[in-house]
Amino acid sequence: MSGFIYIPTTYVFDLQTTPTGLLIQDEIDKRRNIWNANGIKIFQNKELLENYSEGIKIVPNNY
Image (cartoon, rainbow, N blue to C red; front, side, top):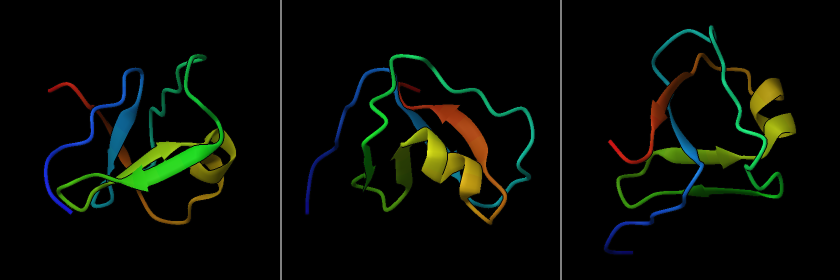
């Protein structure tokens, strides 16, 4: 898998931080969650995010 995946109104989650201050945009497609080209999981599923057991931090995907 090569290249980058760009998905508007999506957040990339860093799995090394604590689950505080979570922000979820209403426009997020709640059916998809994929891995980007760097191996970082992109959550587009609010329920999956809320039930995820590890600490996460939001980083806008257009950084």
